[in-house]
Length: 364
Image (cartoon, rainbow, N blue to C red; front, side):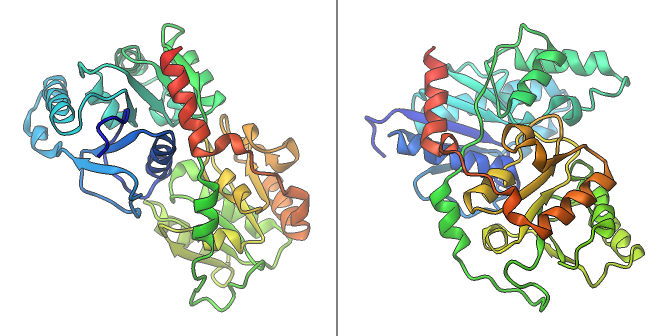
């Protein structure tokens, strides 16, 4: 390690196969390109992505602290351990970025300087603030966490929601997710093979995302059933609604047209060869797969959920959330004339450019 380098520490619970985790690794690359010594600190061993060799990885297990019954004391003691670990094993960080609530609940008690929270989701939906049950208690708890350090939101929609829900005493800004266009292109050139004889380049429509309520696969499948396309629908992802989604596919008689490929740590070959990408989400923070598809010149249509898609796509590429008929029409248009939905990748999303925004915000 170069001791003369500035140090960036990115903290996340685990490196599982989600968009936030991929975002952490990509942002880490951005800091590396700025000349930082980059450290990823996680609290669980779970790793589902190939690790960027330019970054340094550490693990400090949270599991033993779960035996402490009082949540606040548990997080206070673990935060003390995190501070000690960083100081002794890493050094004096110039910037510390906490990712997702499990990490945020710990870092609220940290005594280290230069900490920022990265808010990657619309908190209204993430924490069910649209429901009245325990609403005041939920908001108070979130305010206690997020007023302690500046918040960086991954889209304007996420920041607007954060301020609306938690109040203007929360310090926040918007910095978009980073996307390594060259890496995406390189990974998209890996072998494209599948046991499904129906899966031919430019002859299928693709959805990438966990099978959860948020991603609205029920709306996607129903819209696909109503669309006027014979191209198969390919689903990349796993999740707790997998069996429910398969049952819906069967009930609609789509067994021979909907292909479940599960989670793949490299979705880019499938993305590159897709005729088009479709998103059906009810809510999002930013939606990584949109700029990833744009980096590969793949056309995209999406639901216009409260944050994310409208900040990257023109209005003609968007449909209302939970509108099966509108999505069916748009999917038909996408399959018939993909070129109509092509949008250029914006280089403002490149890792080095995004990391520079964090540095500028910290010193502003």
